[in-house]
Image (cartoon, rainbow, N blue to C red; front, side, top):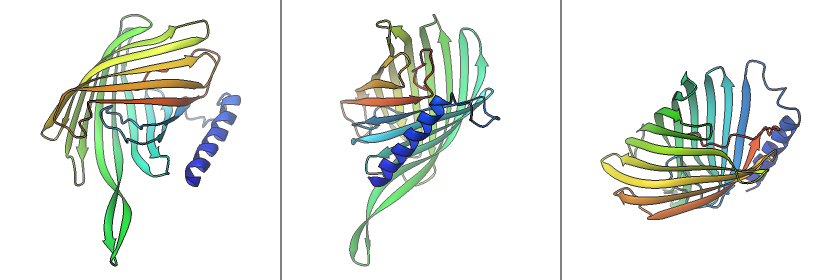
Length: 260
């Protein structure tokens, strides 16, 4: 826990300083650097049907140069144990007024605790499993605040465990919806199809974010409902609430849209 506290304090101090300086001191070879740190009572994966089942810390960073970005996505339990680490390399292949297309790929690590017997004693070890993934993300903007899109992710396991995953999403995004002069809302409902080797599942989920203008903090609620699934864990309903700290915070409203 001490390691987690140190990590969080260091991150907040660094980002608060960077926020005050307007990120003018980021490396000159970058066009932009930003990120989000979140804490939640139930860590939710990129695939909403998979959750840690315990409180978690989530860190999303984004380093941008032109159309290319490097986006580490790191998730930890509050005990300081890593959960998942994804190191995304993303490219904006098409950027039109209405239509956009993003492609990306990542190496990733998934961690779990296993019990082993060593010298006659039961011992817990942290095991990592390697995998790679690739994504294709077309999106069509109908209005400034409403768009529809598709997200497709293919994952390949390199170690023991699940070898092949397909994640196909159809979503709608309502962004920067003013609830008052200072409060904004983002809402993203979606349905998706998931395969895990030979097992399949159909789900629906939604993400709702509330934020205040000029404030780096926001709240996100996530709900996920299984329609028909063979995949474990097959929880009929899962939910999570996240407290987010985004940086930098500027005078204009921040785009709180999820990466997918």
